[in-house]
Image (cartoon, rainbow over all chains, first blue to last red; front, side):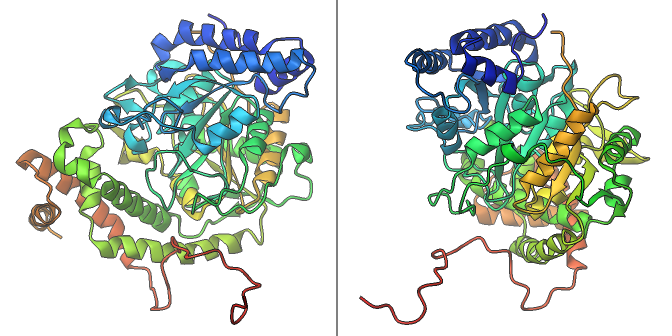
Length: 465
Length: 73
């Protein structure tokens, strides 16, 4: 079946001009989900009744001649760690099934609702976001729409797959160590991990309080920017939301990269990339005029510290359930959760002390550069069930290795756009590029991403399902 | 740490935290912890001074520049 849902920015315009009704857009999205999700398994819950109410409200506003909000009628779905009023927040787990339904929408869902977007459902993920593959044993693995035998990436695998399968033009996910950028890379869609502290996390199920970020996936750079502008808002009730005002980006998207200092990350980011990953980042560098190789400070130490902090905070968060019902956890991650809970405190404290020094070094790097490029994943999507990856003759455990290139960047809190690219030698599978900017400069990362999109090297590909 | 030392550590710390692990799980957890120990050793090579504080995760109240000195009513 061919895709039926138009791209996000065009869809919003079509609804705004009355060329298409919100209900028609929604029904096309629902038809696509119903026709394809039996094979993709992106959705763990559907909210069609609510969606029809929300779409009907948009059409009623239009009929009354009222000005429509910026995302009026745009269908979207959220990783199932976002609270949806009246729905149990699974966070990919079996354990959470026993909890009460959420009494309110998550903050970012409220923002999208106020902007007129239409929520169609909740999406598959790794249990409690501890994974990069969405091989969820409770709800089944999420399949990559470009090859159903391959992983969609994770932990926001359902979000990446739902956009790639053109079930929805927009989805929300979370990213602690790469959980937006990895599935965006492997599914061939656009993803934005904003600056740490930019978007409120209120009403989302946490993984690692000191590193968790939330952000959008979309089918175009314009779609990412539209959603991101709506999602921004200071939130004094999220202690980690550091943004004090909204900084819209949609108006500056087409400024180009002239005058920007664009560099290509070498060293660690080159050594841990296979030939297709090197190919896509070189292609992006050519388009953006990046010729200089740049050394990111202490990437291996940053990955080690992010790994230790994630394991420790994640293990501690679930300690009660690990004591009383370990067999109800995801078999692929329960032992890592336990090992994390047992880590000596000195490891964790040292990792947090390193993080402060690391921040200074990364911020200093951006006094010389505006945008830096790196592959998003070392490889394109492996087959479901893959245990080991060969990266330049080194055997790496597949599941943690998918985050090798993303972990050091999120640990610094920098904003990153993942751009969907299509190298040779991957059997037609995508592999993304990270477009990285200094903290609070999402505008620059999106401007560079826009240039990649306009050049034609970064884009979605239609899938036949 | 040797393999035996990691195993013993897992058993002792699991007991301290009230986690009941069977033998197979103890072995698997020890394998994960040994991998993390390798990462922790990398961080140990980093010179840190006593003034190198952890990244902040707690703030009692946002800083307010106008509250300079004694509060007036």
